[in-house]
Image 1: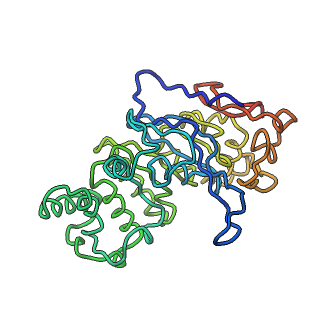
Image 2: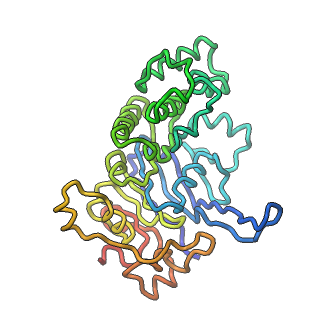
Image 3: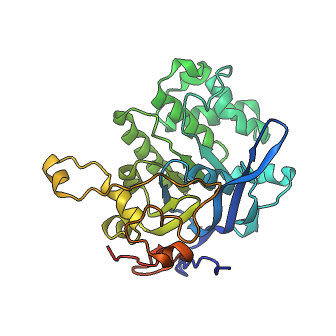
Length: 337
């Protein structure tokens, strides 16, 4: 058995969330009534810390487990095993009653602003629902709080009595952000919050998230496919591949000096505004398909697509450990490309 992944956090920075060997497996059904006995290993032994007040970006291909990781951390899904310690308290196996009161500290902004709002409720009811569920304040006080939040995210107070279908995608996402902040959480998972929006609106929403983070002293996990947006908003970046973190470090270090071949391939795909510069930059095309999370490869999971792979890579899984500049990388041949 390999040693637990090594995570080093500076002593002067407080850890808000500590994730220890987190796993989430989903059973594969043969039919409605029978299980096939196989499991999708969506998250397969992840360990890292999230510092108070930071934004940690999570990137990787579709199906690598990014959204599952975020939902497990805030306990929208129950992990298969491992531990989640939030502000000093282990929340992995909290009962429904205790988890309900604890959820005030954790919220999520969903990817699809069209599907995340109940079309039968007015905006005031949607944003104020967390206050009602937690029995916070009187009816008048809740309405004042909701109207104040609507104004803060850039919406007019008379929108309080309108329905979701009367708003654009960008406005709906602002409503989703207001709902997430209603009960003053410490930690917010932003699950692809701008991927469904027009490019012209994306920067407005990202800037709003940054302003709110400073104002409300929030900690973010920002999940995205858009590496340019992640670079703009994140303090640190975690690169995921097939249920594992393969590289974790400060944003500047990751983007300027990637240590893992997979990270380098992802960064090479970022569009460059200058076509001449694009031609000069090496574009790395990964060969082969993403392996199945039901039966991941032995050893390094990236070995089936990695140009540097050797017999060592195919037999021995590399640990996520510090190499250079406090970057954590899971690769036997880090930087050797």
